[in-house]
Image (cartoon, rainbow, N blue to C red):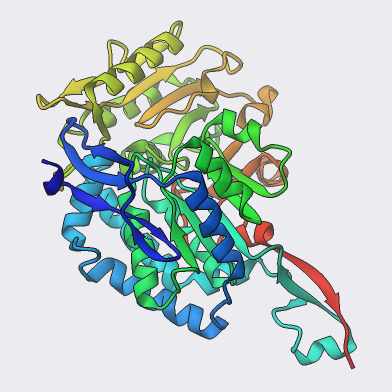
Length: 458
């Protein structure tokens, strides 16, 4: 059996490394699919040291290599896997629908092609990119890196976050990626494609490792990014060298001057797009007026989504092993007590008969905005619907990665845009999951990676 498993080697500065310690990666039905090499802390330390010593490619060569990597990632057989085999493997181990995997891969490739374009949107308008710029003769701000090596503790809920760290390569960082054990296929394929495209083995590495080694990945880099829940955000809250990406808690607001019926497609799409697994999926809908008709309409739409295995092209909803799905279900039922369940009140698990189960949508109506449920974000289409009033103000809308507001009240819009804890505001029929290269997600990554310094020369 072991010989038939897909081998996912670590990708160190010396090339692929088949470690003695390996982790079996199983699919959502519990069937072994791959073996992931797990490297020890010493391997991580030496790899990070090699990245620090490496010499960057010139900017033009980096950008050309990123473009070549995009094509390799999407079109070529990479380390023995065709693209079709790759997307099937990702859907089976992560439970994310194959159509979502395909779309995420296209997003990653597009991000590679446009990495320089996106990264440099963060540059202050008063700064130049190089000290050789003629403007530095009279004194000018130069945009420079805060370090040389960037570490990524990758997310495993969806492939799309791998699009972001490509900007670090465009800016001249060397990058170390610690893949998620839940879904290591995407970073393995991406790092392999980047190397085939021209980045050196000591420019970008893949370091699957245990918790001890994971800390070393961050400690050995100048800067890092981590993904996780509230505990991860709290852990790194005071660390200026680590950018923590936590829950999104994205929301929709409909004020009395807007008819929710005209925007129902956008609302439902924001909740269910890519199976509701991303931080930019809507998890709460607040409406000025009676929330019941809207909750009922959302539930009716979501209930029509079929339950299918993730590799089916018609699949939308996420799939997990039955035991994991049941744990999510029990947590939801315990947290939803006291709410009015329009969908999912008796449970959200539908078993597929092979050891896996679909997480079906849930819609709950809240009586109060301060009950705590608005902060609950789960990795499937789960939404909390509640009445909002002007007296409530913007407090219930705070701490939102994205807020989709359907309102004509410009004074309210001013307050929403000005609220620091609301990271993005989408007005009208622009769903919460909308993103494009060149616009910030949770701020620009370049704001974290770069700084300005004054240079004046003769």
